Image 1: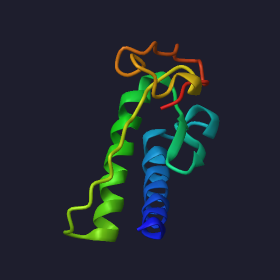
Image 2: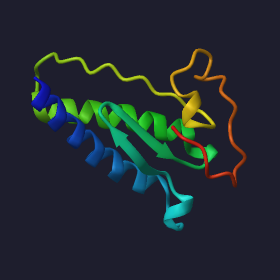
Image 3: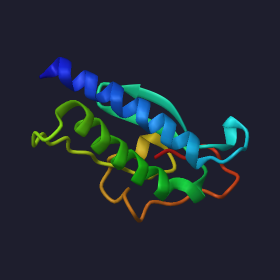
Image 4: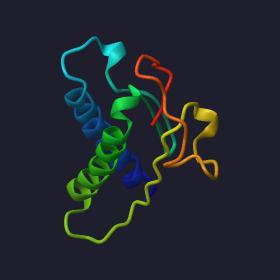
Amino acid sequence: MQGTGAEWALCWLADLRNRLWALGGSGPAADRPHLVFFVHDEVVVHTPAALADAVAEQARQAAATAAALLFRDLAVDFPLSVSVVRSYADAGKSGAGDDAPRLAEDDRSGQS
């Protein structure tokens, strides 16, 4: 299953990248949501604060799409935890979910 999990992650990332591009409109890449890091089972996305909730939803939808692509009708569960935080250091910490501080519109250091 480990190899198949890696294939799932690649499908997830490819779909998520396309979804993020569609969210960003026609602005420069630095002002759009974009993938910045992936390792093992973690994805880091930088996004304008105003798009953080939409990015989180697109990450969930891309995960479901990847599962359907690879496993069709099989009931394979890929638990997904999404954190919207100011800093990667806060991701996954207790209390860093929905009540996490949001970024100012022009602050690009946010992660989802």
